[in-house]
Image (tube, rainbow, N blue to C red; front, top):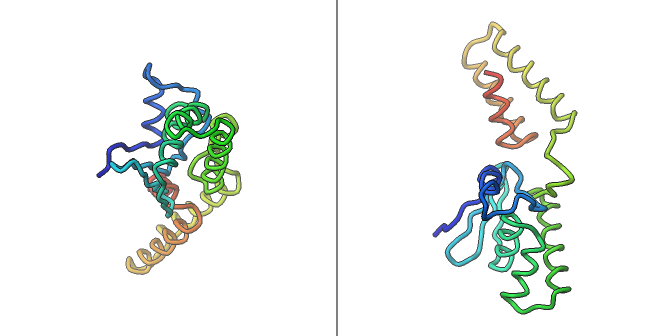
Length: 171
């Protein structure tokens, strides 16, 4: 059973409340959802096509880091499990770096998730291709197949959420 759902938008709005700190050093990527389950484990769902299961300890580290900061998660790990402070700090750093390498979280201060120029150029090119398909005097079935093929390749190149954004903006 799911007991809590964390997303980038919900964390940003929650940070404005008095009980949460807006100074979290890590943040969920916009396409990622963290589902915390009743057994204190979690599932990270990347809407760009990936997911992973997280142990109870990993869930504690990640949720505390996202809600507050990594220092708070180190303190919580020490108090909950009685591990030495240096070991807890090292474990938290390794775990968060691993998740950042997978692309599900990022350092809040160092990057604001700006799209790279190449990706923007390719999205503009796909928009032009979509408009060209619409303007061509082709049977509707051929146009439908071409648009579906374009959507397939866009999903493979850019992920689900960018493709949906792209298609909504292009229509």
